[in-house]
Amino acid sequence: MYMQTQTFNIALPKELVKKVDEVAKREYRNRSELIREAVRRYIKDLDEWEQIFRSGEKAAKRLGLKSEQDIDKVVYEFRHGKKAT
Image (cartoon, rainbow, N blue to C red):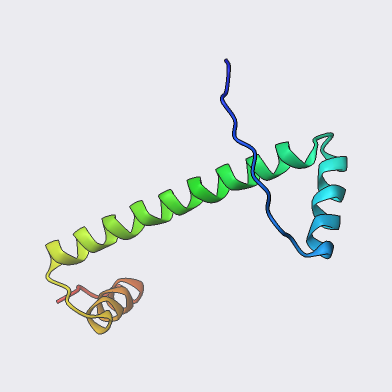
């Protein structure tokens, strides 16, 4: 599969570059491959967390929960085997 690429420059602290190089060497990758993978994973994780929060917001709305205190009460009751009111 052909992947179009674009080159850009970033500034990183020297210590971070050193760690990037160490990990890249251990994994038999170059800097670009390692940074590409790190960015892909970061974006994937971010997308997954956003999906989790959207699901939580929908569930809270469905249950009529309007505050963090409401959520805390439901969680407390669930953990202690009580019926949520």
